[in-house]
Length: 152
View (tube, rainbow, N blue to C red):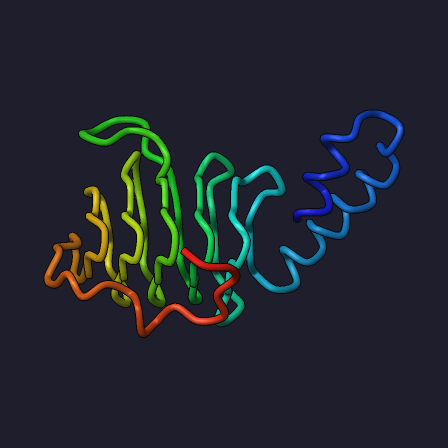
């Protein structure tokens, strides 16, 4: 994914390598069930705990050291109170089966529980559970985020 994005930004000279990298990206998206477009803005330290069923909108923004588990969807809405795509800040944990939908921001160190549907902004260190997601704590994601890169 990062290779395809880099080659695309380097111009027409590297176009054949870009085409090959896009082919490989598409192959691995089907093989592992993870659909993250090459042009998605993702910081370093992304950790995917388990393969399968992960879908991220190309316009979403994901900060550094985020943990994404299986069956997570980060998607857009085109109407309602928060139209647009999500912005996920640094050190965020997305539990299995969670859905992050709309033009909302998940604050730094937020944690989203399993099967939670988040449709409203979440403050820094917020812990969200339920359908629809409600903030139940401000303990944050400290003990859930693993494999971090660099300091906050």
